[in-house]
Image (cartoon, rainbow, N blue to C red; front, side, top):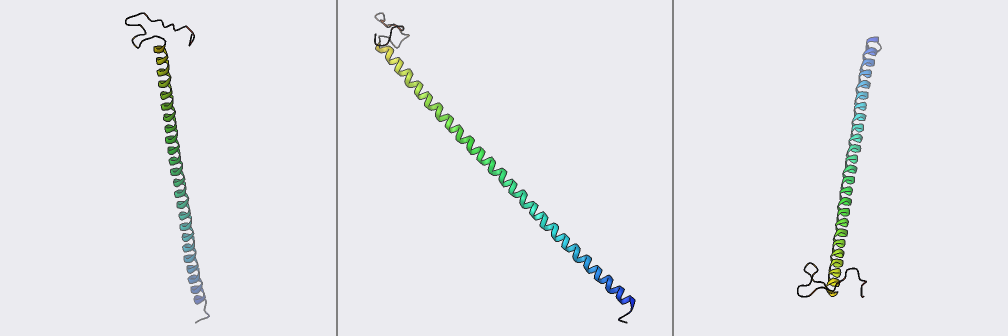
Length: 116
């Protein structure tokens, strides 16, 4: 009986079941796509944080190296100034031992103008 009500009811139930099945599968596929996108976004965010950390570490290393170079330069300059002042003192009659002469009194006057 092709035209009976029970056949139409059975076909309707079968179609409804297929529609529900395909609808659920479609929604599941959409959820999987959304999860993939969220995972990708999290991975990119992690890469950004890693990059920022590495750049910061590199900048800190460069700043430390620059500071150390400046300190080394200042130390060399101060050593040169100290040597020059010491040589000037010796040239004016001082000695390298506590500023006093070993055999004769020193004629060095710390308050006299240079070259005078």
